[in-house]
Image 1 (cartoon, rainbow, N blue to C red):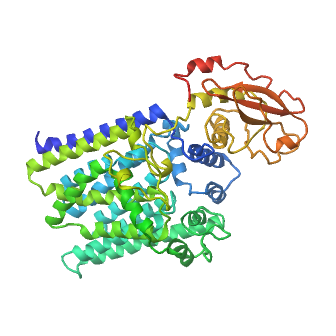
Image 2 (spheres, rainbow, N blue to C red; image 1 turned 180 degrees about the vertical axis):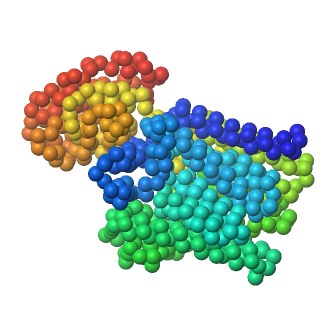
Image 3 (tube, helix red, strand yellow; image 1 turned 45 degrees about the horizontal axis):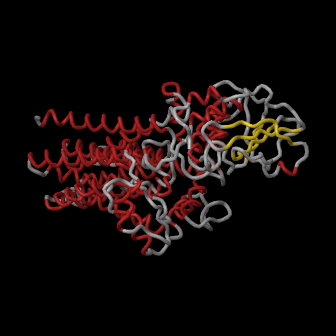
Length: 577
């Protein structure tokens, strides 16, 4: 195989193989349940709420943004909804968009490496390396914020590496817009983005031909422009959203909270307050904090089998001149120190942004090898990458199922040094196929096919009451009712908390799960109210429980409801457990 042929063929093989794994996984298994209350539907519910606000003609742009800005900023949902006419808007249909974000991330890192090493071959190697990182294509199987945020941050870094030394104003503005976009996907991009842009300028200063070179001055000017654009946009957005915005919600997630959701004394209406919120309340490093992120980098980001050749290539890179070492060190150490002193060590999704940085020196080290060694090493990395990916997405391996580490129980060495990839903590970011719970999507649709016939305007449901899932279904039912209204033309229904009163005169019903063979019991809250009675029970095929439908004063709210689920049962491929 010629070098010219392999230059195009190997990336094509990698893209095809990784795409096949991701698309097969999302098509075959659907949504990946995690947490409680059908948490896997939270983002899809938020996306439908964003669409509902967008369609409201009575809202101004500012009012729309204020409503769409919730626990997270709205940009991811807006971008996904723009693709709706082409790909659809259901939870299953949008899963594959994670593959687009993975491609953007791989292209961005490739541009960074090509700029740093002045080698297109190194850039192609970096592209393939990022595509093969198992945690990244594991995250691409879900609709969540971390992978898009990471892709946009590295896109900003790519723009900075490529153009700041030549056209600092033009590329500084473009890099700042990418940073701002990353913030509007997830606010943890703010500290990481500052670190990455600073790393680009620091690299130009340390590794440039002269400390007084025009290139370094341009790079510094461009970095200041990028930070200014990002800061102005972010501050304006935060100020416009008011006190109950996604930024203060993020502060509450990464530190001690005050009454308004962020650390005590933080005023997010000013630049000083924003920086204080992000960098306040540093924690003293502990053994658990020091061990958590390196151990998860090995166990649940790269896997020992894939990290081994990466580390060997890092050794080659170190001996061959260490080109780009300042950028790599600043990104890795800067982000790790921020996580070490600011973020509780309980979530390895925070490592996704730093993970591609290891590919940079590995790719540069790879091109410094002799031609035959390059071919052998590339083959080894490809085999290791696809072996880990296929095992992660398709192989049933109980021995690799991860026990989530905690502050009181760090991972043991034997739980880390396993050749395959482990789940992310609590399966929040990615999960092995063998340990993934079944979302039971066909059964959910079979239940909805019954409930949609009910004339109720409100479905009252306890958040933790399992109907189809094993840990509550409130977010699924809220998503499904809103999707039916917006995309299927049905009347609008709401799913208020079961203890909330509904407007007088509105038709309502209550739902509760019950073990098959047992007598349904009225759920809490409505048990104390007068006039509630059992209207009907729906047995769920393949599950050892059913759904009880309760209505007021003997009203036949579900009189039109089909009496049997035989047709739905026959459509299921296999019994659900």
